[in-house]
Amino acid sequence: MTSEITLFVNPTAGRGRGARAAQPAASALRDAGFSVRTILGEDADDALRRVREAVAEGTGALIAVGGDGLVSLALQAVAGTLTPLGVVAVGTGNDFARALGLPIRDPAAAGRLAADALKGRAPVREIDLGRVGERWFGSVLASGFDSRVNDRGNRMRWAGGRFKYDLAILAELAAFKPITYRMTLDGGPAREIQATLVAVGNGTAYGGGMRICADAVMDDGLFDVTVVGECSRTTLLKVFPRVYRGTHLSHPVVTVHRVSSITLEAVGITAYADGEPLGALPLTAACVPNAVRVLGVAPGA
Image 1 (tube, rainbow, N blue to C red):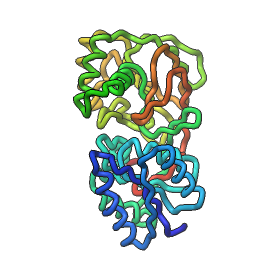
Image 2: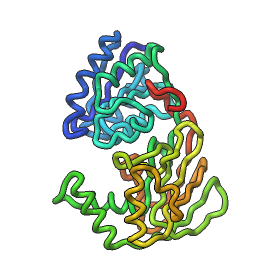
Image 3: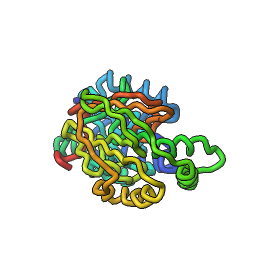
Image 4: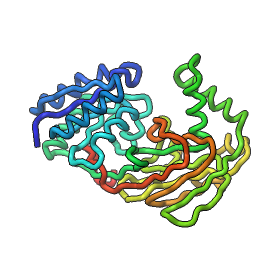
């Protein structure tokens, strides 16, 4: 393994924490004897091209310093390769890192853990990823009410931060109505359902701790598909807060399917994967076992 490590940095992650986190993470890796090359993620297309080049040239590891958006970009470069991924989680949500028990907003500890894993003193875990066409995702693919909230929030140029999404939730509740889906599980017969949302989980959570697929396991070769069925606004308002604890799964309006592939069709619905827009339905997602090696994560964590 080469001693050169690539640090992939989003300087704007977590309101500037990404830029501040790069130095202690890099110092921990250099203290362990590694040479560190830094790539900034200011322009997504250019940054992805450069990290793919680093992977192709044989970098010893790709260390993503930022939030879930940057981790998602890093996955596009390392998925299906032998290059391990390290995560220095300093974003707002950090759902990918939380699901794997990695340090949160402690860049020095995350850097040391990655270095220890590269030297064989800490574990490396192979995990599954979701794949839609050429796009990989690590946590959750969202569609329905939650993706409509994202759509509306992204259109609100005049508002910012958490306030923007709170307003978007209120607006979507006012316009709320069930969605007609055609859903195909593991290549079986298509079924038509009325649902509020369908979430496809490789990991457990999205949106900064909303445990929509609370029982998902990241190395079992299966998605957990959470379907929140047709319900009233009142029921949705009762179920929604339970998502943060994962206790919504026991509600009668919620069903869970464990599958290796799923096709979703619905009119006018955008899918989001790892918080990033993926495109309009229909789409087919497949769970790809052992798609990436993550530094510092014990098996079964």
